[in-house]
Length: 589
Image 1 (cartoon, rainbow, N blue to C red):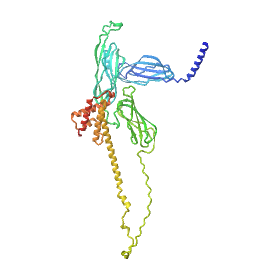
Image 2 (image 1 turned 180 degrees about the vertical axis):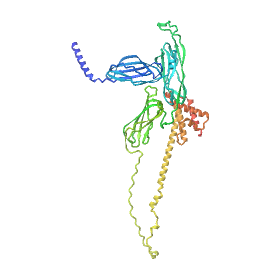
Image 3 (image 1 turned 30 degrees about the horizontal axis):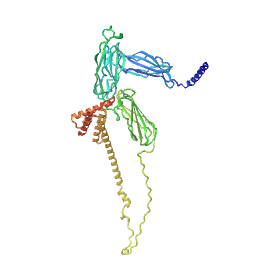
Image 4 (image 1 turned 120 degrees about the horizontal axis):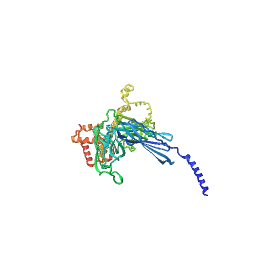
C-alpha cells in the first residue's frame, strides 16, 4: 500500500511544480553599492572601500580600481545567501573590501567599478575621497593623538562643510574615554557630535584605533576664524615594558591605568561674505548646490478653483535657509502657505530633498501652470543661480473674477414733437393794437431744461468716483498698516512665548524692522544691521546690546543644528523685550 502512495505523491508534486514554475517572476536586477569608510583622509592614512553586490546569478570578482594617487589592495571577499521577495528567491550577497592608501593630497574620484553578474555587468556609482596633507604621519608612533579634519579652509558665510574630530589610539593599549570631545568657537555653528565611528587604520607601519566624530560646520560671519583646539581626556593602560611577563590566561600584562589628555590643534579658516553684486531679489540665504522642479494637478480647472502644486528642492547645502519659493509672475494667481517636509536620508540635514505643497488659485485665464523661482548661491562656482520651474500646460476656464459686466442701457423712446399752443383770444384793449406776429425764439432760453440740468450736475458722478477711489486707496493703505501691526503684535507674542533662542531673536529683529517700516510710511528699512542701528539715536550700551541680538540671530539662522536644543531663559527673554522697547522709543536720526 505504501509503495503505491509515494509514486502518486511524486506525480502530484511534479504536476504542482510544473504549474508553479511559469508563475515565477523574472530574475530581479542586481543591486550594487560602493562606499568609503570616510570621505576624507590624510596622506598615508588607509581607508576602506567596500563593494556590496546582491544578485540571483553568479557574482564574479571585479578588477582592482585604478586611480592615480591612490593605492588599492583587496583585503576581503565574503559571500552569504539571503531569501526574500514574493517568490522566496535565493539571492547571493558578495562583499569585496579594498584598503585604499592615499599617496598625495588632493580630491580623487573612484570611478564606477564594473562587476560581472550572471552574464550581465553591474556598476557602482562614482565616489569621491578628499585627501588632506599628511599631518597624521608626523604623529605616527605616538601613543595617541587627535586632529580636526576640514576639507576646505576657505568658505562663504552660510556654506556648510563636513568636519571630523579624529582621535587616533594605539591598538596595543587599552582605552577609556572620560567624555566626548567638545568643539566651541566664535563666528560659526556646528551640529551636535554624535556617536563616533570606529575603524582600524595603519600609519607608518603602526596600527591605530580611529574614533571619528562627524559634524557639520557653518560659518556665520566673514573674516579669519579659528576652529578648536579640542581637548580629549582619556584613561590608558599601556602594555608592560617587560614583554616577557604575561598576565592571566597567557595575555600580555598591562601597566596600571593612568589619565591622559590629547589635544586636536586648532585650524584657521577664511570666511568670505556673500557677494552683493548679482544677488537676486528673492534670495533667502540658501548656499549650496540644488536642483528645483515643480508639478501641478489637475491640468484643467475653472477660475477660482485651486491647482495643487508640489515644489521639490534637492541637493546639498543649508536647507534651513530655504523658504517657500515665490511666483515668477504673481499677477492672476492667489497663493497660500505651503506644507513643508524635509528628508535628509541620514545626512545630518545637509543633503536631501525639501518639498513644498500648496494650493494656487487662478483669478484669470491661464494657459500654463504657475511658474516658481528659487535662488541660491553656488560656492563652487562663486555665483548666484536662479532656477525656474517648467511652464507645464494648464487650461483655465471661466470669466475673470475681477471682470464686471456693465448693465445694458435702457432703450429710450423718441419724444413726440411739441406744438406751441395757440394763445386764447383776448377781448380787451390789446385787441385794438396792430398784430405784430409770433414772438421770436431768439429771446427764449438757449437750452432746454433737461440739457441744462444734465450739464449742471455732470461733475457730480465724477466727484463721487474720485471720492470712492481715494477711499479705496486709503482703505488699502489702512489695511496694510493694520496687517503690519497685527504681524508685529504676533512677533512680540513669539518673543514672549517661543521656547528657543533662535525663534526669540528672529522674532525680535523682525518686530524692530516692522516698527521702522511703520514709521517710514510703509517703506521697508535696510536689511543690514549697521543701517538699522545707525538710523537711531542710541546710547553706546544699548547699541552694543542690540548688535549682539542681530549677530546672534544671524549665527543661529545659519546654523544647521536643531535649534530646539538651545533654550532661552526668562531673564534673557525679558532683556530682549527691554531692548526692543528701547529701540522703538529712540528717535530717528
